[in-house]
Image (cartoon, rainbow, N blue to C red; front, top):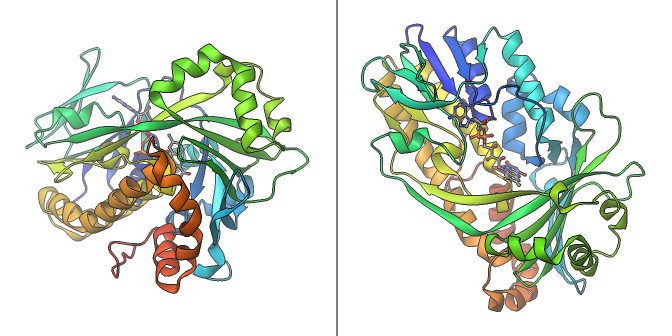
Length: 400
Ligand SMILES: Cc1cc2nc3c(=O)[nH]c(=O)nc-3n(C[C@H](O)[C@H](O)[C@H](O)COP(=O)(O)OP(=O)(O)OC[C@H]3O[C@@H](n4cnc5c(N)ncnc54)[C@H](O)[C@@H]3O)c2cc1C
C-alpha cells in the first residue's frame, strides 16, 4: 500500500495500538482524543495471553509486566464456599498467565510509545462526524472545526461511540441489565493472593477482586481491583440505602475485605460502568473503519474487550500492509474479523446472564455443575482457548 494519511479517533486501547502499528509501516498517523488532558485513570484490566503477545510485538510488554501483576488463576466460589470456577492458565503452557494491570498503566505506556513513534496527538478534540467517507474523509468537531482530508479514518471511540451512528451501517445496541461498580484499593501487605477471584450469591450478586500491580508511576503500593455487580436499575436504591448497607452486603460475600472497605468512605468513590452488546454486519464504509468497543462492545464477563481491541488493531494493520487500496483492505478486515468477533460476542452474551442477571433459577444448577463440567477435557479445552483469546469457533482459532 502507498503511504497513507491516517486519522484515528479515540486514544483508548484500540486507537493507540493501531497508530503504533501503522506508524511503523511508514504511514502518517494523527490521533484525535476528546479528553483535554488524557490521564492514567480507570479500572483493573486483565490482559489475556493474546493481548500480551500483541503488546510484546509493540515492545512494551516488559514495561507493563513491571507495573502489573501476574494472574495465574481465575477462581469463583459461592457464598457457601462451593467452587464454581477454577481455571489455571498453566493449562495453556507452563509460562502462561493473565496480567492484571491498572488501565492507567496501559494508557500511559501506549501514550509514551505514541510520542516516541512520532504519532501526532491532538487532545480536546471531540469528533462528531466524518464527512466525505467514500472519497477523502475529513473530521468535524463539536465546535465545527475540520481536520483532513485523510486517506483512512479509524473510529476507535469506545462503547458509546458517536461516530458509529453517523455511518450507514445498521447497529444493534442492547444495554445489559447489569453493570458493575468498581474500586481500586491498596493492598500494601498483599493480603489477597495473586489472581482474579469471584464470589457469587445466586445470579444477582457477584463480587470480584483482582491483583492489579502497582498502578501508574510513581505508585509503589500493590493494588487490587474490586468489582461489585449490580443491576443498573438498582443503583438509585443502593445510593438511597447508603454506604453501610452496601458494606454489609459485601461482608456477607467476603468477610475478609474490611481492609478494602476501610478505604471507602463515600459511595461516590465507586465508579459505575454499564455494558452494551453492539452488533454490526460489517465494520467499514468507504474509507472509514470502526474498531474496538465502538464496533463490538460486549460485556466484560470474559475479560476480553481490551484484548479484542488489540487484535482488531493488529489485523487492521496487517490488511493495510497486504492490500493495494484502502477499500479492499477494509473489506478484508471485516471478513477476517468476523469469526473471532462473532465467537466472543456469542460467548459473552450467553455467559453473562449465568453470572449477572435476574434469572435466579440459573444459580443453583450453575453452582452444582459448572465446575464439574468445566473439568471435562472437551470443556476444559474450550475454556482454555476462549481465555487465551484465540477462538473463532468450536474447532477454529485465529493467529495474530
Ligand atoms: C468495569 C470494566 C472492566 C473491564 N475489564 C476488562 C478486562 O479485565 N479485560 C479486558 O480485556 N477488557 C475489559 N474491559 C473492557 C475494556 O475496557 C474495553 O473493551 C476497551 O477499553 C476497549 O478499547 P477501545 O480502544 O475500543 O475503547 P476505549 O478504551 O473506551 O477508548 C475510547 C477512547 O475514545 C475517546 N473518545 C470517545 N468519543 C470520542 C470523540 N467523539 N472524539 C474523540 N475521542 C473520543 C474516549 O475518550 C476514549 O479515550 C472492561 C470494561 C469495564 C467497563
